[in-house]
Image (cartoon, rainbow, N blue to C red; front, side, top):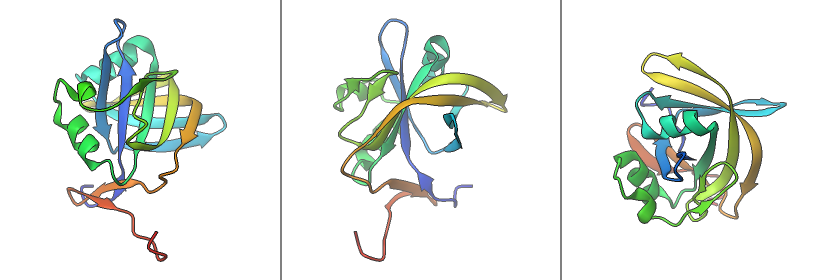
Length: 152
């Protein structure tokens, strides 16, 4: 699957004590439009997954094509990642407005264990799209920008 290009998201949540958590995720998809539902696949043992399971809310921040540094930061596991990016509290957790071209606040509807991961199904409570609609992609173990015929 490393050769399958996909969009890049940073999934975020807030723990019971208000501590923000987040991780880069390329295993996500839209499940249904009615009700609007997303699925994210998160590694068991992840502090982000633990925060999601405790609070039952999470945010999907879809990274735009100039947010590679943030995607790499949230993939690194660095403890101070939220000190190194601008973020703001949203309805379901931390929003990354400088780095995301779309943000969705989600409420957990169910989870399903699969191997060493947990599939989390979240109903979208609200979503917003920015002026930077070009997504950051990941495939072949590298980040890339979406190329279009018009060069936009």
